[in-house]
Length: 110
Image (cartoon, rainbow, N blue to C red; front, side):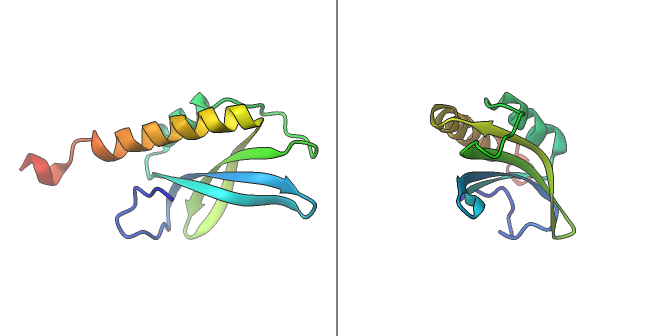
């Protein structure tokens, strides 16, 4: 998993969960932590491909989540096919890399 949180534990912030449908309901299998910026996290989620029309027959889900005081809050969900999921994971990874490595670091600027 990728994390933008220095302590590794998130009490407030945004993340994307990947889930697959099973006989017992959606089962999470991946997560991308996106940091604490609502604007950056939501801008990334809006770039993802998939359908906001979620049906119980859909097999793959991407959920945009916010952690508030240690409690998860589902903000938005997309259903997608395997091709879209692969492209979305690539896009998320590129954006997390950009946010992690290309954002100005105040300690480095001193």
